[in-house]
Length: 278
Length: 255
Image (cartoon, rainbow over all chains, first blue to last red; front, side, top):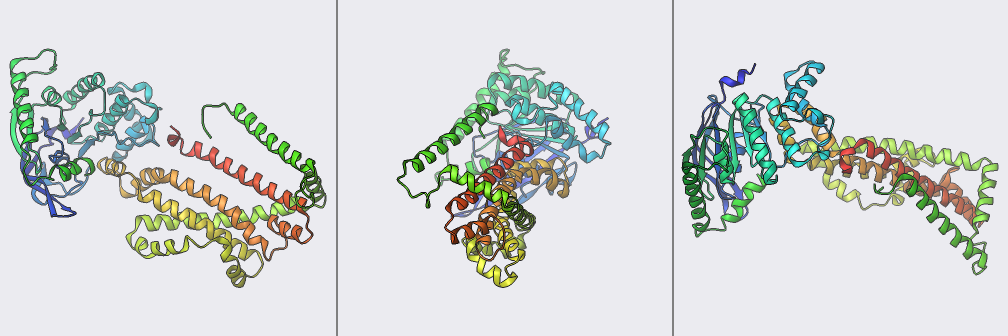
């Protein structure tokens, strides 16, 4: 049913990104980065705020061009936004003028299905995220968690080969976030789309991902990679020693990043800008 | 406009407020401290209105004025939307036309009346010109602003969901800027009435503005007040119409 299941590997090689800056000419947001996302894998990236993780995601999403290096999706360079790379934004980015159903249908329109079939399929995607009954609701009538579920349904409906998630649950309360983790893993295990998940929440990264990359402060580099082999579902209330060790290690690294700011550093200010604006 | 009070309560409050104004007006004129020739009582205005109605002028003036406002609005609004679309979506038009917009904005409609009369004579042409011009500027400005400021997350979401440029325009850019466009149309409609009167005050043979001017020559303040009340009521109704329409059209903005 999903031909995308057999593909979706991403290779980021020697990627750097520079932005023009007001005073200094150019600011380096990403130092050379190499990341490989195997098809069907779930990779998380944690890093201090302003380290360029969102810039990395924007490059893979096709919104920002690399200054040097390449980003390949199944061997083909990514040159712009493409439905093969789906994105879930922190602020949902649902279209407020469309109902939940309309938002999911928006993603399905690229397949050129007859209307009837498109509606049926949109309904199935909403059902999968537990919102079968809310299809006619508009985004402003839904809670934050529900909005993000519609956004998930919409993104999966576009049948991307790769799914990028930029702190998607950062705006939700703890309880809702746990429910969203379960939901995301359930849908993901069913579809096995390659996921790149950006967060600053270490626990979230360790609960969701197969592999966690730790980024340095700006200009971002990958300074550590942790393989998480624990079987899912994982939960924070059944902590094992491997989890705790990994957690301590990452938190230690992040803390070091925040104190060891380079002395040339108004870098934290423009760095933050990349995360917020780009 | 605000949601909490029920429509009936809102209506009652409005009626009460207007009744209060009427009472104060009545009181002031009944006290006899002001010359009734200069400041007519509500009753005198009512009589003048009835008189104009019997002469058939109330209706015919209304028809003429509304017709001018409608034609001027239609021309100005459609040109404004198209121009706003061009200047916001294409770099060349933005570059070529935006400085002009900045220069034209401060020119009041009434300053155009002499020019319009020389260009188009004292017929309908000059009225259409003045009205459509003011409407055009307001609608252009708001359309341009709305389309230029479509949030980036919407366009990014749309592109990463595989929408073509055309679909993005129809299903994302237009609805995202609709609140601004509707606001522009609403301002434009109000301006249509302002410039209508400006255009009718000179060189017209009918219309509410003309009737005001005619009443001045005979020092008929009661007739002038009829015209003023007409303009006020028309403007308020028009604005209410826009509130109702935008509530339906851009329902998601109300939350």
